[in-house]
Amino acid sequence: MSGKAAPAEARPTLTMWTYDSPLGATAGEMRLRTLRQHGALRVHDAITITWMAGSHAPRTGRLRHGYMRPRPEQSMLAAIVDPLLQIAAGGGRTEAALNEVAAALEGTGVDLDALRAIGQAVTPGTSSLLVLASHADPEVIRPVVERGLARGDLTLIRVSLAPGGIERIRDVARTLDLGA
Image (cartoon, rainbow, N blue to C red):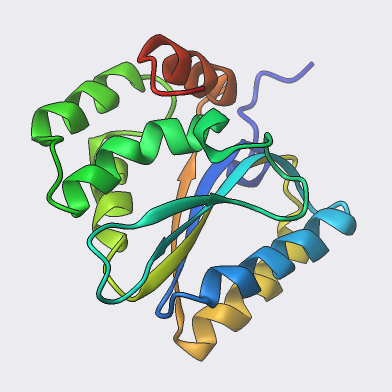
């Protein structure tokens, strides 16, 4: 066995596909479904975040095609992003809650800057698809992502996770009693 580190593409990732419309994540979900069917990645958890213009706060939802547990409140991603969404909506959570989540996620690859970027991407009139995946085939995924970026209606946040990062995120969601 080689002592070389795995290429970034081989590492698990947390990605956030943010669309400039409340319905964009639905299209993203269909793209994710196609990628999954072609064996381009293994989805461990995925959620949508939709913030309709005029509403007071974003909503976290489950995907309709079997990528996650039955209810969003059981999703490890929903558990981790809940404080971020409350901060974005001006809710009861504070920067201290964000720091608490960042500290708990230390060593996963998801740091305070990544959490801030995710929270700032959620704005009224947008939707996002947040995906925790591994075993990604960059040759299949790259053209799908590049098409969305070229259209200009998609922004992408991508975080390469540390080895064991998915398991650590699952543990953190349980430890913080955020619903996982």
